[in-house]
Length: 109
Length: 113
Image (cartoon, rainbow over all chains, first blue to last red; front, side, top):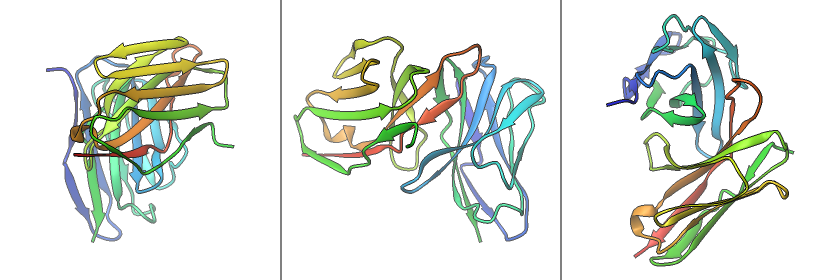
């Protein structure tokens, strides 16, 4: 089946650690996106990539990094510089319409 | 002024009611419009996708776009308890291959049996 897979579903991070969230798609879409969702804030854009080996900062990129070495994959690293990383993270791929994964819930412990 | 405005609700209706959800936008460059349904702790699910003014119907759902007023709506007929979710509007500006999405904040809907 075509779709977007995010893993893990739940992730726990200690203070000061970097963690990487996985996003894989087999829809053959060029564009992929990472959003953060907090209660009452809606979806906020972290990073997006229109094509392999290229990506742009979104509205809240500080403390995050990405790579786009393959069309299918767009991993997001939450670094220790991100002051408030506890949130629900959503990955999407776009080709006109946008399709989302099921999200990763990150909690700092 | 935010580019996309959406009343966050919450909205509570009885089963069988007609639900109207709305978004307004300020930039006429938005040309593609989507509605998503998001259940708690799940990713958003695409419900409707439109790119022209007018109505688009799919089962109990109708998406309406009025580009002259910069206003979009989602109507749900014969609402069911299973429709209880957060509904998000999303828009894409025209222009090359730039597919940058802009979302409303979402409206929380509860349909009571």
